[in-house]
Length: 419
Image (cartoon, rainbow, N blue to C red; front, side, top):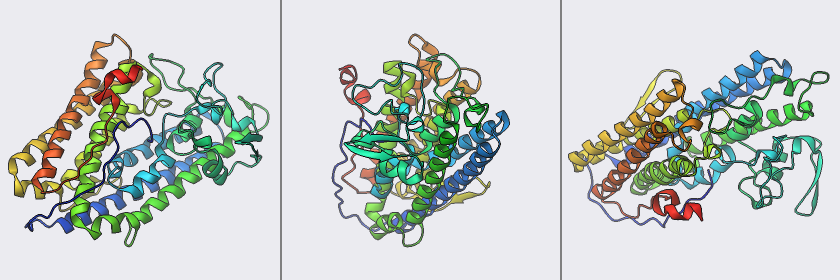
């Protein structure tokens, strides 16, 4: 997600530390192994999604649409656990906006409800490229008669330099599978009918052939983007080389990812901001109502990095040398406290997930006056903020310096949210 981060990551500085019995080189090497495994699982899940999308396009029905939606939900499980690799790793942060950017002006892509495509800061908010095979962009005539991955990635995504012009990635696909969620802070996700993909007679929403082409191209693009990231963490890849070349810098990258996702990104931009605004448009997986799961797996990913563990989608578990080993050797109390706080944040995120599964959608939790929903969200926000302080202490314990945790106005300057 590329949006509203209040603080800028500062340049990294390191200080020399004495040799540790637990080996930093082994820890960062295992971290790279975890990244490779998690992106590999994400890639396989995206390929499964592509197969389900192909079936939907070939035979549109309620059943094939439901199967494609389920495949999208399953694809989010491994991917959300990778988000902790951002911030400290430029190879990921520079790439991430192509696959997980939000929120999006969905009217750029397809039809939306009357009046919902208005954005004073985005002239393309109502373009509807699915219904518009030719248009002008920045004074250039664009031929979009064929919707291809290249058209999406090179022309449409972040067109005119506007971040809300999200044309690719999980959330563009999510919108095409579910459609807009027009329930406000009430229950219910998007209700796009399967007939929006029927070719010829029976097509609803118009341009069903182009809608299918867009969905196919966006899914193919997601697969190729994830193939790129798997390669980046494989032997000789840019991500792996960056963290293993200097183990001390690699440790700092690990802790930067943990702290920035905990604080500015998840606690701030993804959770407290939406609660302050009581706005379901600030919900991360807003079309599918999958946000509680996304939040939970983000939190799990943070804990994974500290403990050096990852439960793979095939049922196996990856374990190895960890930050926890290094911190425990230096200061067992800091390790004990951080472990407990990571467990607490995962538990609080699970409470949100459980409440949603019990019938209280995340949209409803954001509703003004919903004391129970506010308590659930703020319980997780507070736990994430608390663990960030211990992550910062772990940096000191390991003799590192230069940690810069991404911030959020919702946490650092709340009055600015309403300006």
